[in-house]
Image (cartoon, rainbow, N blue to C red; front, side):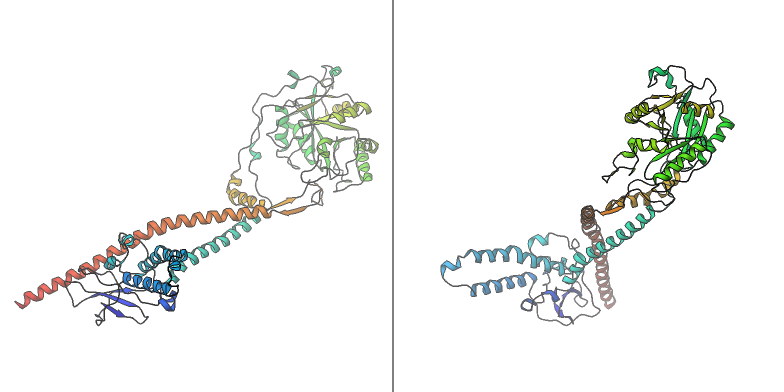
Length: 563
């Protein structure tokens, strides 16, 4: 039995056989607002011939009886016949036209696409599927009534399939934007901890290296009468080194040195601090010569054997006159001016067609300015050009590790002979006299001390590393750092936005989002949704069954009271 509703739809009235005076009403809504005027039919679903319990909306009072309506299948067949009649009326009646492939194609579309879609649409809009299972096509009859969701209109479908994913996509976009901006700002902060805790490295627990045992002097005529193994270039925490003054001394002792030059960038403070510790604790093992490395955008130059910071040329781009004044002041203080690592300085800076140290004076110009010598070995690099130039011009020869980190190895040792009187003054005197040679091991010493990972770094690593990852969206090319009071870099800075990389990132995010939506559809739509609908279905069925059983019991009680 069907009753009209205020919204133009129909309600199905299912009357259980056991009690005809208390019916259950099955509400049935169609996609009314989305149907065209020509097909605006309210499809009512006929009641099954057998007695069933309806799981539809129930009213408090039974509605008045109305004329029976057509079943969903009958409505579909009616629409199909109307469509076929319309198609036949619009076609010519001759035999050739009736066999037109276009007509067969239209029939195929209507029969195998439109009609199944209409049936499926009607199935989704039917709330009480169990009571009307015989009205649906065969594939839909075998589905449990709780398996697919119930949609009252196309608006619900649009909200579920379009608006829902769109909202989640916008939410994901907002979260990503906030995450990218915040982590990038966090990763660019000052004072962030390093990944390795170099402060934990205080000892080097291996037998000190003895280079004399496996290396020969570069100049074989130098002989075996030498007692000083000098490192002419090193750094501590007073500049960009990672070892304290005492740890730096221990590192040199462990690597076979008994003398070193501590030459921090643009300051002599580190050398003086190391010299004081050496005299107090390690006088019998190592000698320290204080120095500073003049560091600018034109050159790196060690001023060895001084006791004050010479700041005439501590600027980004010192002039030749400033360099001359610096060298002259070092000589006044009893020091030496040594040019460091020319191969490194003249190497092409990555991202530019320029050397690291632009406008680096030539060796001839440096000698004219008053330079005393050149560093011929820096780390594992041997500068054979400077070595030949030194020999041709009777200049000072020196080598340096340029050590910054405790996990570095030693590659070269400057050797001198002080006749057992290894003081800073005697070492400087031998250097001035040009009586030096060196040992060189391109492999480097094998034992190294590795720093443990920093606990503070662990605490801040996730957002820091994530921000550094997002910095891949652009390339900030800066060149060599100047170490000058003005700060900045020695090369022109330029930023390149990597649009292609951003496009690929967005594409991968979109792929991930689609995968998420697919998984969500499987989990929510195909697992959780049916489980919840089945639970509601069984609960509602149980309630209706209990109500039905209660009515039967009431009838039996009434009959017993009568008798």
